[in-house]
Image (cartoon, rainbow, N blue to C red; front, side, top):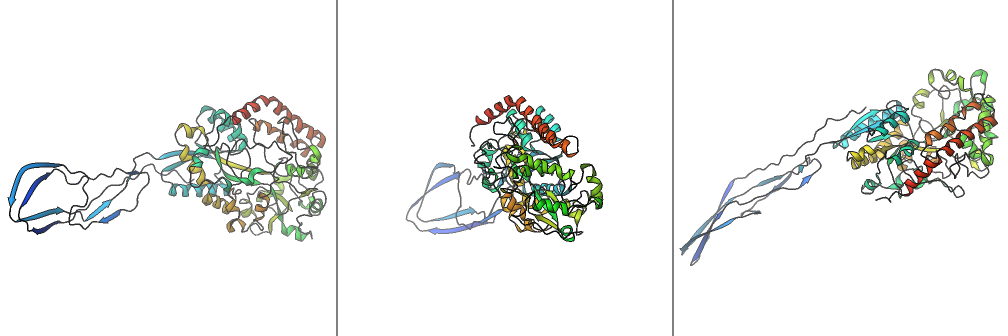
Length: 551
């Protein structure tokens, strides 16, 4: 994985080339000249005191054709009491001329900064992008060495142990829920001060879901709610930079739809309970192992968006503004959850225990050609080589409710600067590293490998990003630019504990509970956690409110 470059630093050596000695004879006719002899202890003392912190790969040559001494910085004159009176004096000036001055700026003698980076992007399309980024970084930033430390998806437990012991890596790819669990406990270091000094910093360049890289972007105002991600960062304490994004959308097997005589859905006329329901039913044949859609108990993939699509107002997120209650089932949101469960019960989505059997050697049912539609989070880099050219596929409209298209679930996993960087005096180097990984080179590479979504806005508009496969890949920009997204609501210090509410959604999908019992089970799980952790939430919020403004 891009290995750590050898430690060390090149020093520059000052060189000088001396020219020939010149003799200049000058006849001066005078009636009487008094010559004062001066002993010169040292003609020129020149010292280059400027030290630079980067290597200079070329020398500067200065040709000095002179008849007299060009530069005297220090001359010690000792008067001698000897007077010579002559009628005619011929003086000889002997000059030692430096014809070529070679000046080399000397590099500061300092150790190379070593930064540990914990990251689970070690295989597949994501691993390819990370490996490429590490290699390029080592070439362009020789003064910073990255020691890559692979971690698995169970980092919530393993990295918590490290952060509690103070042994965590200086940089780590984590999530907003984990970040908010530890930020008020001193687990992370602010970088907004270093960012504000950096010439490449422009907070509007990136999509910025709230309370993931920053704290203080609370979403309590539901009546006037607009997803803040389109405005970028700035104005709040920041502890990391975005690296990979995800947004739930839909991909379609165009070949399967054509074979079944099913027209491709049209944006604006694709209601969940009408046109979408028809498409799912017409493309499903359980006996043949084909289905209209794949379902998951994970809310962000499908049913959370469906619940909000069917709400009367659309102002209900997962958690209520009082931070004490589950909220998304209100105002018609329960219809979206019920519809999602019924896709499995009605046979238009495969039973959970049959998914791998249907997927076979291809890894997932969509890649196997057995599914008309499938959710996508933006990471199609693994799907592309599995499908190859076996069928035509691409992005298309997401299902709609009475108010229009379902709100997308938008999230961002970023790389964070931890308290280890502050303890080791590496916040500026870590900030420089984070900006590179969030910048156009690396984000552009992510757009090519497609293990996840880039978060830099200019990359989303690039030709590389728009190009297939899959077809219509530029559709993502339309989804990302919407302002009614919902997100994980990471602004809670016990987010991962509260996440059990989402895991509690599984029983109805596998027939262990009725839909009504399942929804109540989710509500009970959520509200119990929120009530039990309210005191810590208040302490967390007070800590954030007391943070000094960005430097």
